[in-house]
Amino acid sequence: MSGDELRTLEALAGSGVREVVEPPRRLIILPKLKLPAGAAPSAAFAIYHASAHGGYSTRLFFETPIRGANGATPQTVTDVLCGRTMYAASYNGVPADLPLHQGILAHLRLYEAAP
Amino acid sequence: MHHTTIQIEINGHRHDVHHASRTGAEIKALVDEENGELFRLDGDERQRVDDDEIVHLHEQERFVIVHHPHHVSIRIEVDGDPYVSHREVRTGAEIKALAHRPPGNLLYRLLHDGQRVKIGDEERVHLKEGERFITVPPVGHAS
Image 1 (tube, chains in turn orange, green):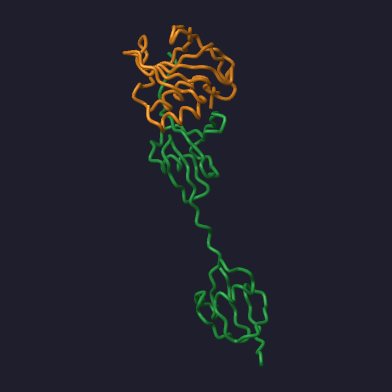
Image 2: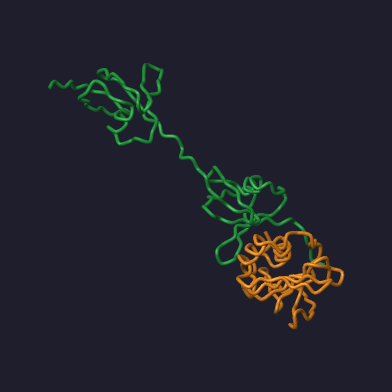
């Protein structure tokens, strides 16, 4: 992760962003990722799984299921990452080769209010 | 010492001048508009007068001072990369174009608390120094 990328991610998720590589997994720890306006909670600890996971090209896990701005809570699966039980919604098609901040924000679109 | 009083017109307002010869800068100083560009009017023609140019004034001579838009140079970031905008107002599409991002990408303005505000392609944004934007390809779908 470059210094510029780290700076951008810290703007999105607070200080303490770090990368954990557990081959073949690449995990990005996001201490306090800000959720889209209207979602609940408004910020949460998250882990971006920036590599393939169970048929998904990438996944975004949260410490708790997230209610979207439309009031609905998408169905989730759980996995234990870095010793914590984490929740991810079923959202696919976000390539692992995107810049990290773009991949994370692409996943967050699931929780945005409809345009 | 004998002083000549000449009445001239600057931007449509009359001014008494006590010396027949004045530089362009001195004429502008009469109306506290040193930053503008001075022109002498001659019928429908106008001739630019440089700041250090000496003008031999004539009674009822007319001048105008023209102000050009300030030179704008606003530094912004798009996806962490620095760019300079020479316009204060740009649409979302123009911000993406400035940063050579695909037009189909979504554009967000990044707020200080980490929150993002989506910006539409036609939406006009008043850019601020140091403002940060993020683009996101339109990828991903619920499965």
